[in-house]
Length: 106
Image (cartoon, rainbow, N blue to C red; front, side, top):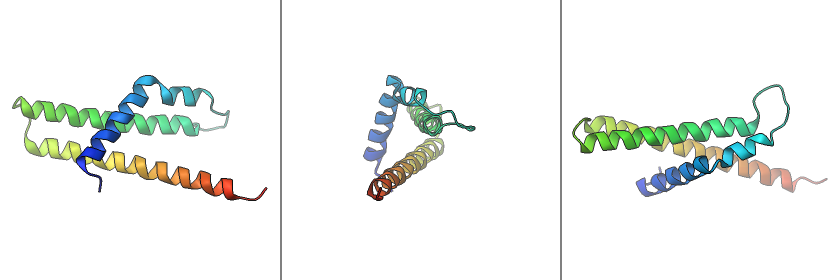
């Protein structure tokens, strides 16, 4: 399980990527297949993780002002942790698949 610092850093990195439009630039170079492109799916996944992080931040701010309870904050942070962990697992698998493809003989 990721530590809170790792999760916070991952959330900040995702936020910077989404604000800079990195996923959109990758999505514009997508192919013309029948379904959604991989880059579009990736953009949606990153966007959902970012939204989960924003929800967690909102719950934390609401708790500091006395408008939310601790259980809501813990639940939101746990959901964000699961989302970030899932995204990291997918990233690791994509990198491993790329490396496997690069090792294939031509």
